[in-house]
Image (cartoon, rainbow, N blue to C red):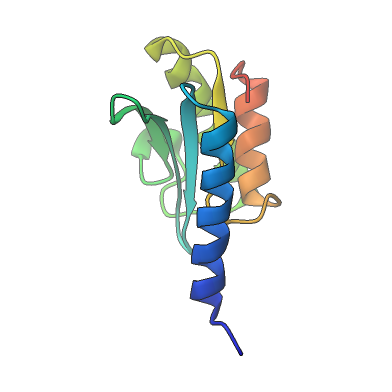
Length: 119
């Protein structure tokens, strides 16, 4: 039985998120989305159902509009760490979704950790 890449991605995303919800109840979630052209990150409070802060390569002030490489991911990670401090968030858990933890996704996490966010 052959599964499509999309089906495998969706199964992996559900598996990751369900495990994280059990372990990190009550904490803020740092969610990453990566497309072919952009990368975006959100700090989400699941209890209140609100987004506290976000950063993306679509923002002109980051200077990496339309780029999706490790350099751009690093800038997005540092930006989300700064915005998290402004929002009063010191700790979050990293939700990689269905994406593998390497390359651009890892660069976002490492830059957020260096910026002072505890992941």
